[in-house]
Image (cartoon, rainbow over all chains, first blue to last red; front, side, top):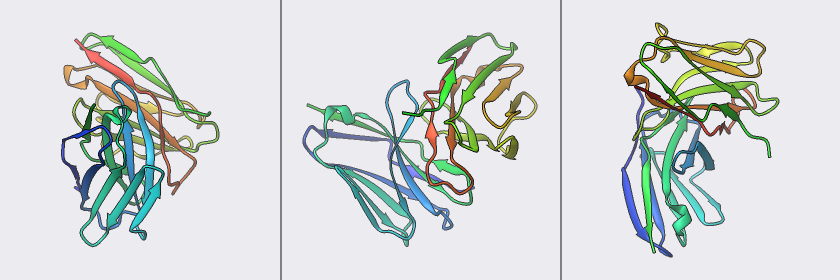
Length: 109
Length: 114
């Protein structure tokens, strides 16, 4: 089947930038997403990018897409302690959405 | 702000018992998804509805799981009998329709089977 892979853990200091990486295998993906999940909660959509774009910026968030390498990244500028959570990369092909295992971001004061 | 409602938030059940979860999507959303998220993993799609019709249930363990969305609005996911391995977070999501770019998730139901 098609896979979405992410590194499991990332630790940064407050105020630094965080970069969370994701790779996917489905070349027919039309949209790629970043979701945030806090403990015990559902998934919150942070941002998404259409597959014909290579960058999208939304306030502190920057998404970069390398479609050739099937690589997606999420950069969080000026990371805050409130950004500590699990971040899921997801891709959408025909109509279903497939998720990575999530990257746990820990922000140290 | 409109949101996807799920209940209960938490459920503890004994193995071999029946359990059911309920989801009310955002008003007007035609597409409804049920996902299972095992601890430490990403969500996996169990079933997808378009209005009242199932469009994808290929990953639903049909010997024990069932899902319905009779009037094309709210939905129920049932497990009978529950097994220890069913312990997970069950997430419901909805989107406005076929090909919609965004899916909105509920808070989930945390199921523990003992």
